[in-house]
Image 1 (cartoon, rainbow, N blue to C red):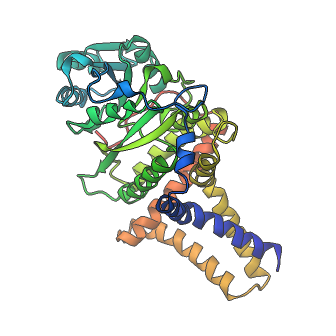
Image 2: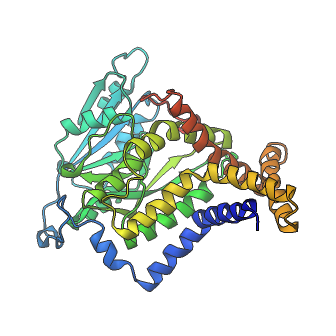
Length: 402
């Protein structure tokens, strides 16, 4: 057996495992219930990491904690009025709810009416900040917030009426430091983006991760943390990737709350989704992974370490695994290793050709191939951007999502 043959099977096994096998493994563990003890250890409920019981005072009769909902906004004048109104319509005691809009780069009212419209819509506090990026705006809002629970959302998201109360209710468990709701992506224009299929599978994985231990990533549309556990991140990083794993390392649980629901528009085209994921990889994923310590196993319970390796490490390195698989397949075919390797090479070529042909023949199979190729490539291109020093802390709303 040649080295090329070994590499083919190894790279293929890792790709199949991270895309399919990991989900099957989580489902099996959940079915057997063998990991629930690890879930209890995955966040002891205090930074010290000791075993902490659920606080009996956090029951149904406990007064509702004050909550600050923070919306970081940049040039969101077209949607901010609706966002504030949507939050005001929450089934949550009005006297316990504070809405803060942090306008990044809001010092030029001639170019951006976000701040004025947020005030007119009824936001409790509007911060007009110098252009410093989303995380810096969130950090500034947290410093001004009065809530015991801090909830975060995007300007283009919409929450169901009970979403905030459901999200806050998760913190009755004293072990929980981070809770993330579920967002459904809408594509009313009927575009080519296939994000919805991927996202449904991603949410399936997160529910299982939450049940067994803690989730390995969140989403920006709907999530919350205790004020006491908030992490003032470097503006080059992001909450979605950094908060879950860093809070788990600090001894807390990071959970999924499927009943806290939100909706958000997706980029209508696959090309738009590629641009969005490339930006996220450049400005959030790779800085959080490399500078934030995700790949450092210290502080992870064993099951959670496996989750991070499976769902994050392997997925983020999947572009490299595909390149290794392609090169090894070429070498194996050149060495006359057999028909199996010729078929493996042909399938990889077919995937790339399908992605290239999708604009001409936009059927579901070809669109899925294009989505997979483009979103996988976005991780590699985003890493290249970041390594070249093209990362910026500012962000632009993705085209077609407002």
